[in-house]
Amino acid sequence: MEKKQQLKEAFFAQDKETVFKKMETTQQGLTSSEAEKRIAEFGPNELNQGKSKSIMVKFLEQFKDFMILVLLAAALISAIFGDVTDAIIILVVVVLNAILGVYQEAKAEEAIDALKKMSSPEARVKRDGDVVSLKSDQLVPGDILLLEAGDVVAADLRLIEIASLKIEESALTGESEAVSKDITVIEDEKVGIGDRLNMAYMNSNVTYGRGEGIVVGTGMNTEVGKIADMLATSEETMTPLQENLNRLGKYLTIVILVVAVVMFGVGMFNGREWLDMLLTSISLAVAAIPEGLPAIVTIILALGTQKMAKRKALIRNLPAVETLGSTDIICSDKTGTLTMNKMTIEKVYLNGAIQSSEDEIDLLAPIVRVMTYSNDTKIANDGTLIGDPTETAMVKFALDKGMNVKEELAKEPRVAEVPFESDRKLMSTIHQLPDGKFFVGTKGAPDELLKRCTQIDNKGEIQPLDEKMKETILDMNHDLATQALRVLAMAYKIVDQLPTDVTTQAVEQELVFAGLTGMIDPERAEAKDAVRVAREAGIRPVMITGDHRDTAEAIARRLGILEEGQQGG
Image (tube, rainbow, N blue to C red; front, side, top):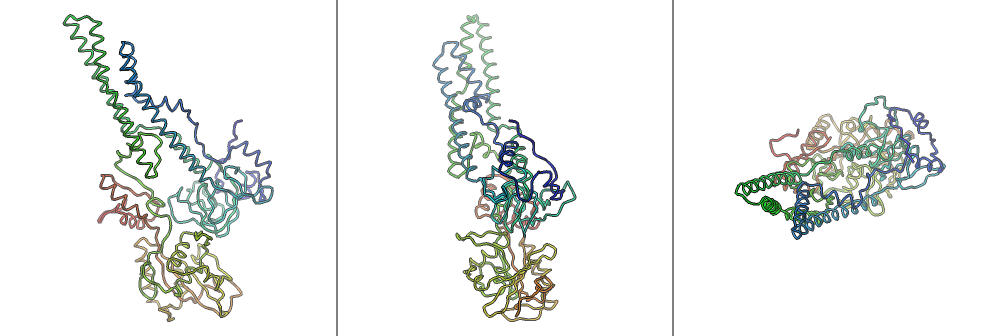
């Protein structure tokens, strides 16, 4: 049965009522019968793997190299003229070479298939008005998919409801910072993926909040599917080794034929029998062909493949191993490859001084309480932190310093909050203290937060915050930012009563400045050594990122990609 084509439209430029209508669905989701009908029409929600090649096809593909064809021709000629032993030896070498290539390719594909099955995510959707959990490949256009922190988005969605939803889309955009989502219609139909705030894309990760969306693209109709399609339709290129072997085979063939013809001509000129000279010339040609070369190359490549496997690298085709040895430039994505894709606090500014994350810090200091209280990170039973990378970094910092965050939050529970909004760049939570009072913790952009601070906490002593102090703090903010650190400010106050109107006007005023935190997506421990080894091998490493230039240059210098005096491109 031929599969129906999915709609390919700029759903981000349409209101949700229009999307509901076009996808022929409702807020309650699809019925089970309708879902079964659509999966038959559109196919499962999975990327095309391409037509699987049979063992015989894979085997025959091993004979495409020019050198192998020359050897086969030599074996045929040897057999025709009675030299059966040579013909058999050549054929055995060629067949063993092909068997080894097929074996390696099959083994690599089995490992890749096993990894795909392990990484298949679950999805929570509305079916028949109820929320059910399904394998992601069972999703169809029109399903209503539910998202929450920790989920992997299983299809392309037009978001219809959100609650502080943030999604990390580095696989598509290269940006490590999670994107705050919005359901507002986007008027520009040509806007890039990173700016489509009312969309969620397959294989991106929910880091914060909750949301619902209409599935508008599954399988190869997703943005990830488009990338997979481009890779599948790209031309297959030969490796440098294959090109060199083909070139060598052609040169040898020409030289051997020329020599054979010359020998035949000289023999005839000297009055020899033409049949004797023909057999002699053919024997010389066959003997001159290096039948052991393909076998030696294959064995060396197979040994290289096994060595790569021990380093947890899968090689599907044997010649790909040699390609690594021909590398002159390595271009690598920054986020998640050279860096951890996990924000980490490096420096803290409090009590008028900068402290390293490794220095001792008072866990009772207000800055630590604000970092952990004004924070929506979830701590799983196994200790895993789920949430926005910036917020999980703060909780991780406190946990590493020995703070029992769960216990502290239980003693001083959250009773109210003013959620983060991009226009004011602040977030506040209010906590009940044991003495009946309330602790207000606010974090956000330093320039915005300082406007709402009237005092500063200096070693536990509350002092007035004058303009000179504010300038000093902003200068410190600038210094940290030029070191590629993302800077957030912390402030607090203690009030006798819970505000009746929990708004920014009632809560986020007359605050006490507590300090600054500087964090960064740190480089991987092994990345610096990898860059050094690449440079020593004569390979030029290049980092590709969509981050701000200052941030990118700072990471590149720490990794050794940029040296003193060099600037990023």
